[in-house]
Structures are given as structure tokens and as C-alpha cells.
Image (cartoon, rainbow, N blue to C red; front, side):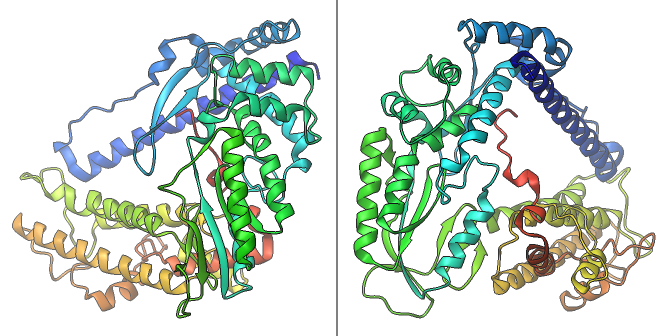
Length: 501
């Protein structure tokens, strides 16, 4: 396939992907609008607002509908420019993305044809060079991912009750890599990079004197290329490590080696021009089993890529648990409490005959959020062997490696308690409006009986009011891991980096 044909195909794919994403956004808005009408009744008068990204107006080549129509002619033009060495990406749209720890990150949004060019050359560079990257480097590869990293770390940590660890992070890693250092890597270390590919890389870096842009595929290859010597130095030192972009953890049983590894980190920081983020880098510490005394500063767990890792268990990171709780609490509030906050309930669906439509809607949405709409019966059939395979979605599909059953049981207890408290408040608000429903289901349930009795109710032959379980879905995920492996269990979308929307 010629360069023009390849570019035409990938430009078309990128445009179709963005169109599909836009339609999905449109559908979500429509469904949310319908749900609000059902929740608030005739009192809900807010019009449905559909937005398009503001940068679509800057240039037609940001608009996927236009690009899809013109993808062949666009590909022809770009292919000629690449062959003549006159190609350069068009002006980017800069977008500020909030960071988890505060502050903002600048992301470059490229026009769709330029993003396609970047992706094409990234795929080509990765395909012929991925065998050169360290097996301990997990980011931006089609043969490694975040779950492989977590599994490899935990297996190693679980072999010892005491392990020296070094945790560190870099400040603005992408934005501060020195070009001199980066370009030196082109002809080192056995990487296959053609003159055409070098030209394309430099074209994407031409508008900046330092750093590589966040938001384009080719930067992902460059980030790993930049770290190759550093990865090799850690391997030669004889330590184990896991690097996901600039998030890196190093571990070893020997104190001298962890000190040497930290020196290597400092050397790489100076050579590449990237500064160590002191706030997010804990330095050297001793990871011990809970209950063991330590003569130096120790910790019982370490956080990495959404997980919390100890020598004897894998948990969901505390901040991630808080996010999960917040989302579930919001779903309960939106469906059970918010509609009753208004003075007039005209048009509202009032619970009657042991039925509460809003409660049903809340439970369906929580289940969809947790595990993608799977029914508990389906999960139990999979666990018992009556069903061979199920497809996992929802937030828990990102946590197939969790082994901390105590945490999962606590989450299950929290969920039942939170639902119970929401029902108590809903009952109180209904009574204030003149609708006493204390005698009817689900408001007549004690906290002890709520879980059991919700599982007995059938609606259209399905147990739609059954309270979902963190422990149950985790057991199914673990079984799927053993039988099918990580890649066939995790939600594929959990690996996607979404810079554009």
C-alpha cells in the first residue's frame, strides 16, 4: 500500500472514530434529557443543549464530517508534501486539562489529518522497534498495559515481606525533554528510524525549542525512546522496576542497589532535562508486611496507576475509592432526592403499590456504572460454570487484579448503608409533600433486610432492584483472569488515552 493510500485509510478511520464519539455524546445528552423529564416531570423545562468543540470553527480540518468527505484529496496533498519534504503540521489548538494534583496540563489538539499522520508514523515506528524497549516499560505499547504492570509488581512484592522501594515522578515530563538529548537517541541503541520518519518527528517538534507535545501519537514513541538508556541502566543495576511513561517504581531487597538506582534516576533527570517532582516522589522507603517492625521509614503499601499495592494484597487506591463512592452517591441523589427538593411535584412519578420508578432507575444506573449492566444472575452463572464467558464493562473492569476482599466487603457494606440512608431521606421528603410511604416497599425495609428483599423483587422477570456487589464482580473478574488472561477481561476502553474530547 502506498503512502497516499495508507494515509487516506487512517485519515478516514480517525474521522469516523470522532464522528462516532460525537454521536455517542449526542445520544448521552438525549438520554439524560429524557431521564430528567421522567425525574422532574412537567416542571422540567430546560432545553437540550448540544455543543460542538469550539476549535471546529478555527479550521474545517478539525471537523470530522468535513474530513471524512475530503479524506482522499487531503491524503493526496499530504503524501506529496511528505515526499517533497515540505510537510509541516498546521497550527494546533491548545487546551488546558486539569491535573489530578492541581494545576493544568497543556494538550495540543492537532487537525485530524495531522493527527492521522502522527498515528501512522507512530504505528510504523512502534511495530519495528517495540522489541527494543524494556520489558519493564508498560506505556504506549500494544504488547504491554497498565494491568500487566500491576500484576508484575504484585507478584514480585508478594515474594518478600520486606522490600526496598523508590517512587518518583517527573515534573512536566513531556514538556521539558531536551531536543538535543532526544535527537541523540535517533542513532543510538539499535532503533530503526528512517530518514522520512526523522523528518516527520522533527516536523512535529519544529514549533518548540524544548519538550514534545502532549496530544499526538508520535510523542508516545518519543517518550519511550527517551527513557531507553535509563531503563537499561536500571536493568544492569539488577533492580526490578515498572515504568509507565514517567511514573516509575523501583524495588529490590538490597539497600545499596536501591540507592544506586536513585542515583541513576538523578543522572537521567539531568541528561534529559526533566526535573524530579519532589511533591509526588517519596524517595526510598521500606515496604513491609502489616505488623512487622522496621528500623527505617517504612510503608505498608504504595500507590501506582489507580491501585494500592502491598506485599500481601492488591487494593483499589484510596482516592479512586472516593471517586467511586462520589459517583454512586450522585446517582442516588439525582434519582431519589433531587426530584423531591422542589416545592411542586406536578408530573412526578410518586411511589405507589410497592413500586418506585425512581428507585428502579437509580439501581439500574448504579449497576451499569459498576459493571456495565450485567445482572447478578449472569455473574453467578459465570462463577458456577454454567456460563463460559462474560464481557466486563463498568468501573470495576479497570480493577481485575484486586485481591483485597476486606476492602470489597467494606464497599459492599457502604453501598447498602448509603442506599438505605437515601431511601430514608426520600421517604421523609415524600412525607413532607403529603405522601406517606413508610408502609410500602422499599421504604418499609430495615437496613438488615434491604439487601435480601431487593434481590427477591422481579420486574419483567429480571431482578433489576438487586443491589450490586463489589465482591461478587471482583470474584468474576479474578476467575476471568485465570481462564482468559488480563486482555480478555479488562474493559478495552480502560487503555485508551482521550486527548481530543
